[in-house]
Image (cartoon, rainbow, N blue to C red):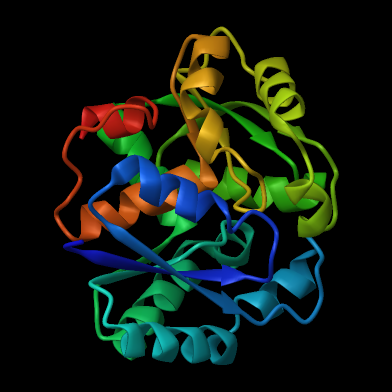
Length: 238
């Protein structure tokens, strides 16, 4: 199938977005390795554990064994809670252990926003407010202006993963703002892969979701980010 991209995914919630995205891409293998999640909680102390060096190193070794061409730590909250420098060190560690270029979903959002030329964004986060605030700080460090930040207050990834299409579309649309260039939806536990064009049709502007940008980031790392349809404006931009 050509290039292969590996994803470290904590626990089980919306990992079935990756086969959906693989089918839409058609020419890239997306390999998911589940990393240990000792506690399913969108709480800062639990997220620091989920993204700890030992947990990610074990997953990165598994990806190395699969022979992937790039690696992405597919957990937004488990990267941005470490701050900009901590998240950079985290991704670098994954890359060293996996032996390939590596990144994380948090950096994927920043790189995707830059690719689309975004300056002002609204954030529709499923997390509790304090966790969502860390994402805002991460985006602002990268020079993005967050014009609105909504938090749904869901603590567990399992509950997030149970949200259906209509709920997701309504949630994103409710937290768009006229002065936002795009809406960012930062939880990899949230299903969005099958509804990317629907989301953008609903709000009339780019919508960047966590699993979407994670896959795009893997393609970017391997030089495979050519224009594609059916995956939102980010992918159509190449």
